[in-house]
Image (cartoon, rainbow, N blue to C red; front, side):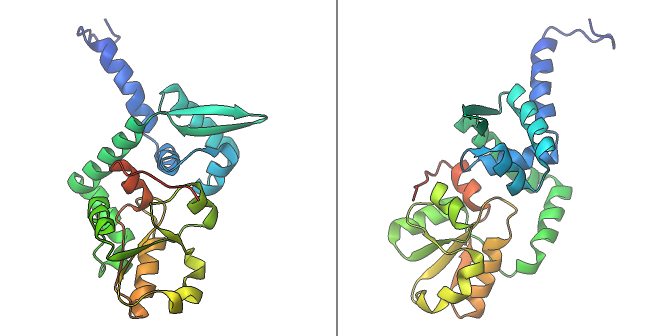
Length: 223
């Protein structure tokens, strides 16, 4: 029996489930998991991408590893981390969608964060998949080029956000242009879609970026 007098038979199971829940109960750890969704990274790369110092990143990864949410492989003196399985990505997708759709505080934060781009209607990963099949769209990856090379949505071309304006004249006017970036709260792709709209291009962005594509079971291509 526990110190609180609670000793139901399933306590051990719920205790272990609680450990997993505790591992998720951190904004930094959730951010690290989102970043790892599209491929493995070293601690140094994760720290840079998450804007978290190296020591803290390493500590948070140990907690995620203990909960079997991430795995690592050693390459010389470096350790490369990845999600422990595809099931972790699926869990993250359900968690994000449930929170945004059912928790008012989360929904409010998301709406405020994307308020500048509220006039755009993003595509879901499923809608993008159907558009890819009919060839009516051009998909652009506005992440840094090294992220595109690590893995990208099939058929997408790399145009980092900072280079978009110099490529405008080469972009078609007779196809819809769909931009995507890294994670569910990345603003690079809606920013790109807004710039394209100003340039008289029919454009939008992928809701949730490349992570939502992966959450939905989409595969990636490597450069």
